[in-house]
Image (cartoon, rainbow, N blue to C red; front, side):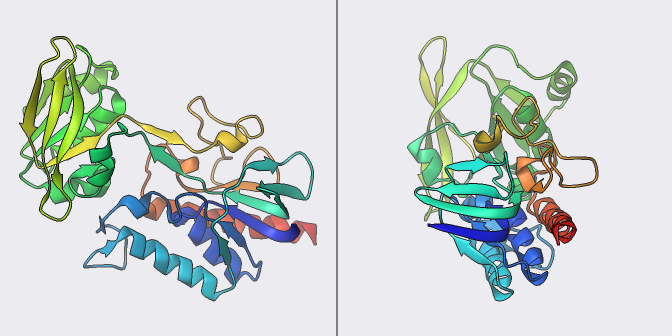
Length: 311
């Protein structure tokens, strides 16, 4: 099967669905491939309290569903296909999903980034119920509480430092005996009375039930002695970094050293004309739903202007 479209959007978080909304309203009839995590990272977030327009907060999946319906209202088509291959070497571009090929004049990439997790069964069970991978998203819920942060690099230190604005204590769990973070970041840890570090400590299990208060404690192991113990806590944040979902584009588009797509200043344009990027796939700094939505809007407008040049 082969189809032809004016614009294809790969990814369906706030960036992709906002891009769909704007391109649909421009009568471009966008086709959105939602992929393996429809709605993006917000689908594993319970309460979203910092998205404008929802004074009482909103559940992450519900917010994504509302934006999806808004885009569909104006003619966006959404499918749950996973994209296997993208050919950007000639125009129109070709997007492949299984045996199906889709031709398109322009592509908006909004495949996002995935928070690196420990891979524990209890971690996925309690995600959003005391387990988080985003302090700026969820830190507010931990006012005057005791929280843990896993990691030893800059990501972990940023999370821990931010959390001290709310939590009464922040304990960093690091599996080695020294931090990997930059010197200036380490100074922030050692000079902050709210932050302590548990060295040579790895997490074995997160304890609690989603329907009865969520996370209550964490079982840890000393990486030197093998001794295990339980640490009581109100929340645990994973600060072990993010991985941009850019595998499809690694030999085609210009990426930075960590895999984020590089866009031209003040635009969503990549190094290939007609290909645009939006959201966390190009943003390693802010990583918020509202900034992703904003860049989705930018990509839609850039794509619309590009398509006008083809007429």
